[in-house]
Length: 288
Image: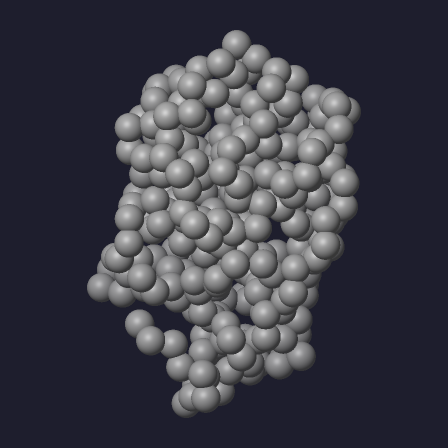
């Protein structure tokens, strides 16, 4: 029986409710949450639908959002002093089952991860203008490390690359009619702005799910450092311009998402979803 929120492993129902609430934070790219969680006696399973429908760009965005939710889930489990034993795509014949996370044993959460957990509630994409304040080198190193922890890479667009990036952006078609919060139609690529691309060595579903976790860790690291972020999938929406962006980055990485990072003004908080909308139960099944 699918009972929704329930004890998992040595975490009780109250702890699991806290964990799942953190994992339902607004996704980076879309308002809709393309995932569902299912609690079992020993694990939390992460599912997604529609991974075989829609354009390749839409499929990539769904996996990035699901990866972001997975990173939130892992961090929230750590905040309960538990190790989050995670397996990605554990069953070959179930592509909709993206991950199985087992609260396994006890683990003291690192101070930097505790800061990221606190940042989950505050993370918002920001389309408002940024100030001219420079991001310190130490923070830029933290952002790069955040991507690498999740087996992805963060490449910084240099001032010399800005004109080429602007040309690529101008050749893209109009984005979807309903972009997510902070996922705009263009990106401020003026010299001096910190524009980065999160990429992966491969372009598989697994690599994209890992890139989504890297994206969220970078965003939470930026939030904890007092930075704002604007996201853009515009250059990734068309295969030709995505290849151009890959070439601009040196040809070794598949670009998955682009960010503009800086100091911005506060934006209104987004409304949280209800747990019953994202947790599978008999009353709220999930068509797969």
